[in-house]
Length: 290
Image (cartoon, rainbow, N blue to C red):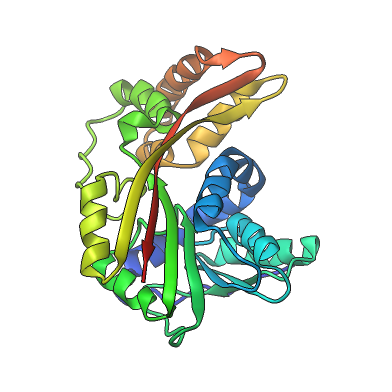
């Protein structure tokens, strides 16, 4: 079995390192196949935006279980390099195991991209599918990563727009909330999935970090949460295990969890059509030059 020792929880992102090396990282690794299938439209979109050329050196920031890294490796070819970097030992272990299974030249490293010394002029391109929204000090993190880029280097990222535009999160979460104790409102811009929901805030962070030619454009699609004989059950299982609702339900009494689960099941069922449950996914596609 391919195992990876956890990263020391130090530096500005210590809380995130702890979080992604807990049972959360294990769950994401366990759901890897379903999550990658659901999120593939965003991998395709960000790599199309990147315009990878043969022989380029690429770092995938917050690579998770490696889906985007594998796609980048295929595009850059044997003369190039694709390195996936993540703070989650369970997900990096899964990525390394998949590289062996697939016979992919993609490489993977357990490291915090915000602080690790990659050396100068090491990469031509930084890409990320939802791996860059978790930095405690984002401007410093992006400035640090810029040091690893060639002078002509560039970046291509995809990050979530506001939660209310993302039905795959908002539909189940809003169905559950009436059955839960009052939740602390999220701090705008705090590390988390929706940290860069405000495009002008993200633009300012990239400018502060020294990037040029910044473009931020919306991209919308529908995400398949469940498909098959019982799509509601599949969508419910994933929703309860992954994402904001799973955090809201954590440590709630069983009776509260049961009421919330029933409400989420009912809400998801309303979106079933042709054996699938599909809900809105709304993101920003972001590009910039070093």
